Length: 475
Image (cartoon, rainbow, N blue to C red):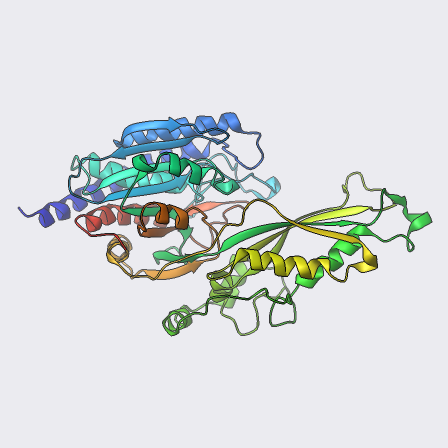
């Protein structure tokens, strides 16, 4: 029997196993979701450690070898496992993360965020989609091969981190330290989005991110608003006047000179593909939870996906001047905001920072002091041409797994390690496969994972391992 026939029979056996074990895979996901592995507030170190060890145990149950919880100075633990017995075949590095966002707006959750709950074909819980669902999908596809055929068509290394939601701040150092152990021929990440639950998508571009702290100072101390109001400058009002310069409502662009410098123009082929993606305004309003009467903020004449995939954006993600609970009649002396800036292919982070700093610090109301400071290091955008052996293999696998033609799309989010890791490992290709959809509400109340995507993505990974076998994957 030919090797091709063996792979075909192996896929069939693995797919049957996936169907038989579906309920148990959901229980494994529930086991992960039950652990509040929040990385953003520094108060859940024990839960994060627990989640790392539970992930390691699930890796062992799936059949991975050399499973280990790895610690690095100042970092939350990483979990590693591998299976390396496919002589002469490519090595695939699977990435996912077990840390999650907090459960803010708890009153809006319809079920306990730490109890995986099925409703109407979706699995609800914090981390169900972002990104514990990816851990379960990857392990399900690996286990399906190992428990039926007894081997994988390719070599596999699996890395699960605990700091993605805080910018993977230690990941690149960890990768450099363990470079030989993690070296691979292709990177597979299952932490991006599909346009809907039935259409598989592969992501070819990511926006980068810059965070700026904007501080306004007007007085040495707070003053009685009756005695000083109208005479003393209000730092909170001044801050909002400064931030208002970033508002593009009624304008064609964000009114900051130099902000769009270097933005990569979409090719004719990309624009044609974009025009083919029809968007139903009412569905989009529902997906984005717009209130009645509220309009979309995209620039005039710009396709919604171009706006979120290939154009930069600014968002005020935090603002602080005084506590609402402790508010009193005072003229406030200072106010602070955090501005998140999403940058796109070909933008230079330093130039973006200079342009925003110059605009925000000029013409300050009442001459108040304005200071703009970058928070952390900028994370660069990522972009690839959708071509090559690995990309073609992924398209075939997604087609087989979903029974639908896959789409190459962009993503407005940021996964900062993808570009540096691929470069570090010699320019290997990266395959970013969608696990979320517009209803997933990642980072929001009622986060959920579509059961259809859960099944079909696992099926696609089964096919992907077979498709990647014997491919020359270097770009």
